[in-house]
Image (cartoon, rainbow, N blue to C red):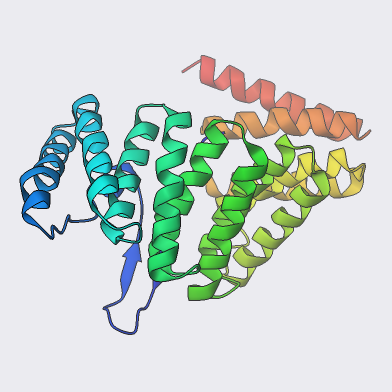
Length: 290
């Protein structure tokens, strides 16, 4: 289960309309460094410039050396609530994450989040990148309760700027479903999935692939909760949506037919299980003959 990025569109009173999309490289280079003293200029500014140069060259090991140096200098020379400390801590945390050093990334990302919240406020859109990256880090470490907490904070931030039916929330809810499943919190998984489907329905995307994937995830939740009828219903909807949206030769169709075979067999619908077993076999044979 890999972490996802999600986009949020917000309108600031003092800025132009802004779309925030936070992939890795944007996170590393998004914030300029502002220096305040001769000491900053001779040491902190140079360390940041070397860090930025290494990132642009995709030399992340070297970038990490300068990111650590920048962070250390900032902690030594800048005030605790100085925004630049948060920016440099965030850069360091994202680099650790990029290098799969997830445990090392936690402390700087938490410091960045705290600094941003102190500077902008607890629900400011500016803190979303740090919160999102914290969620992904906790997921990578299988710290499920902490990952869930960070994702819920992301939802509160998005709601504050776009409302409770923002599509970006559905993406976060899909991640929360997987986290709830890992914790065997199947009722919570069901609630997250239902809310995500409602949001997509309100956006006119009832038959989108994202809706189809939510139905697939809800099959598992309903099975765990012992409701075979609802599991079968979600399975049927998922099949319809995948067939509507995908090319007949798309490998995802073969997988959905195999899943349907298992689900219908477990819920006692043997004729349906036979149907999709045959469709899965035919799909596999057609792919092998190409």
